Length: 79
Image (cartoon, rainbow, N blue to C red):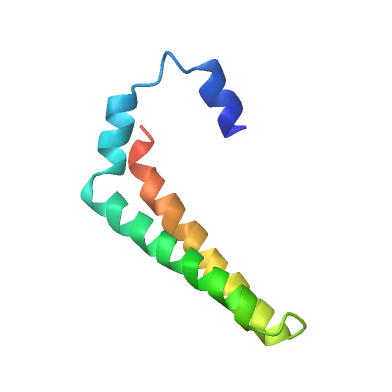
């Protein structure tokens, strides 16, 4: 749905404002946290036992925090 919105409103979107908001201080921190958590999840995906319920819960909790930090990084874009 996001891609459809971007395609339909490509000329209307103020890209300079979008990139300025992404590079603002709180967003940069949250994007960095998201990237680190995604990297941790990638490493855990290969190193933990895939049949273990504890390992699955650990990966899901890390994924939840990564998604929350990604959302927090994008919140300055909402007007």
